[in-house]
Image (cartoon, rainbow over all chains, first blue to last red; front, side):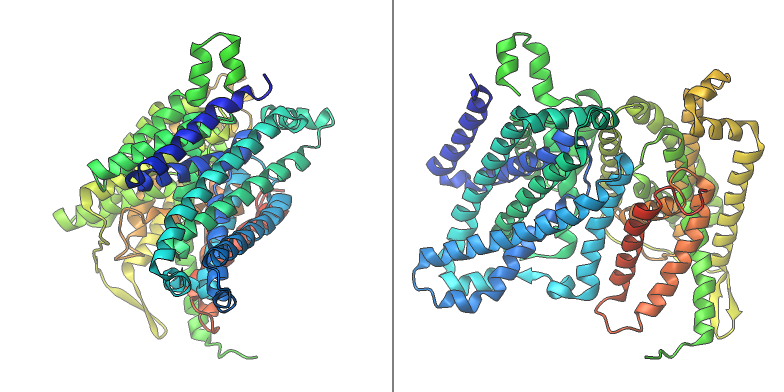
Length: 334
Length: 298
């Protein structure tokens, strides 16, 4: 069965969507879950498939947020002329997302073609440099309103009314988050089962050997990097509609990258279903820890993070594969 | 366009840049030592500096112990901490993909920061330890800062002597260059790993004590983040694997940071402080691309 591995994750996504629509009271929780799942799925395409650690991954999400914020602020006057409410919402969402993706792809192309020549720790440090450099460029030069940040709640209310704004920040944003997760998962599946998947696996195990065998490693890793960044840009655009405000220190916080890494590793790095499982578990854990013991959830998550990375580096999917020795399970869970 | 360049101000900036630089250098040596020996980037570096800063703060505010004595205490705390970190965590990530060690040390950083926040609260704290000032042209420099940079220099020189003139230091450098060759020469490689990581962490915690003399009111749980990032820049500048290179690079960086801040604050930009950071990270990227082996490696 060619598409077997997609059945379980798609069922899980269906369950998530059904919970969202059957019980709207849980929408806060479901969108929380959807965000971390999408973050993990998107980051997995680069981190999981190439094995490179990009600590600056959050920069692409921040650019997506800025893309949406700048669109909202700047096309305000054009949108006022459009009568139909739905058309107005679609226009904003599509244009903002496209701008966010473009920002992310441009930065990813530059960083990818330059910094991906570095490896291991050097690459990780370079990406931190890009992330922090960009943050301080915005704060220091005052571009994009500098350290004041951009708040779009007022613009959204003016454009769509209070109800429209709520609709955008819940229904539209949630739908976007879930869609991004599914798209990222499908892309992961297509890559893994294609020639590129084998090339990336070879690259991840031993880049020099892969090169000697004639694999154009640079091409594949830059490609994975750009796709992953584009999805992060999209995710940022959705997050902007949810948060309705963007400030450089929060938007470029390395914490998001670390959370993405945790989600990916917890579920199973480089697998199709892994980030989905990891995202659900991590977000549930974080959500309830925040509710039960507010303020010290990070204090509890830190040891969990250390234990998981030391004891289960191949994650839950790796664990499942180890327990169920039958080939059918192995074929279904990739 | 001419800027009103004040010669005295320039000279003062150079002096304070060098003073700050000795401290930056000292605060980076630990990172370079760990990377050199075990090829692990210690992301919890800044959090260790934060622990040192709190040590100085509490010993001074509770028992009036001056920071130069708490330097020793912090070093001892660092030794204990370093030993447990090595045997509890770092020993298990040796030889595994970078991702494992990066995430594990990041987890450690969050653990330290959140513990500090849980115990001592998120507020900024500070103390002032006055022992006099000296006149420098039309400026005054606190004596504590001069003492801090002199002690940084002394510690750095001791590390140099340790690494280059003692048998143990030679073993550490041997392991840095070629662990297998060192093992063939009868060196206990794991033992050297343990000693270097412990020493490096002790050094880092101790440098946190001296840093409090430069940032009198900036002690808080998350103060380490900027130091981690700055240490990355400096370590790359110094070749990433050489503690002595890191110290010299720290001097250069301190000077460059002070001077560029002085220069940028003359320009009409919205935040000279943030722009200085931007310059630092641009420098890092350019350097990684043209000379990833550092400034001093031939």
